[in-house]
Image 1 (cartoon, rainbow, N blue to C red):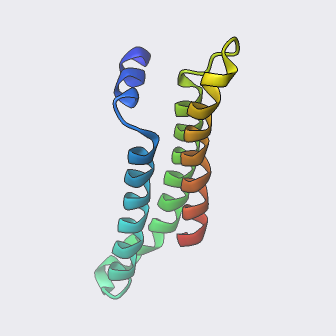
Image 2: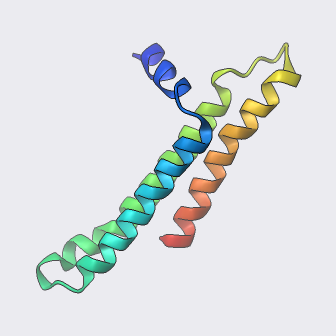
Length: 101
């Protein structure tokens, strides 16, 4: 299972994964604003902030995971750019979650 998930994640760049996470967070934020104005869905809008935090934490760990997939301590010059791309996803998804949530 782990090899399959690694191979799937290698198919996408860190930028694409970052865009997907940001889109999901922004979509849920907009959805919670819409749900807030409907009486039947107010309880649903109250759960969205917790969901946004969970997605932000997931994006943080996913970004760290992406950065460490191909990290090689014996070849630091080639490993650092991949690590930094993953860390960009990690810190950007965490910061956008704090901004929206």
